[in-house]
Length: 117
Image 1 (cartoon, one colour):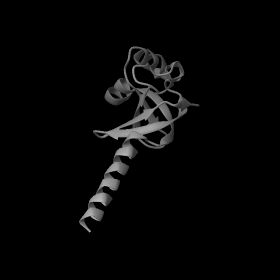
Image 2: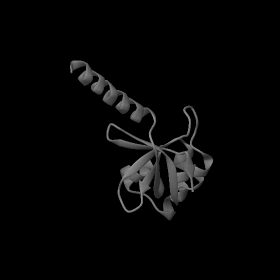
Image 3: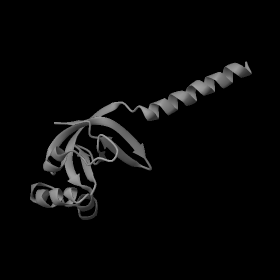
């Protein structure tokens, strides 16, 4: 009986580790914002497009604010040691749909840009 319990706990542990390593794709529709101006100043919208684009080009993290909610995802590039795709920066302050693996760590939501429409 003890071996069955230990084996069961092992399976559960392996499942949780595998779930974190291979996150399922999520599709989120929302507006691309520069996280600094959006979070600290509340600046967003068409009048803020030029500023948001400049901030994104300088490396300020780009956030996707989900449509109809206040949920925000920090966008990550498809691969380590890469910049975000140029079409992300070109669409700052626009409504887009991003698909990719999502993660949550330390209360922050992250979304990898696998594709964007």
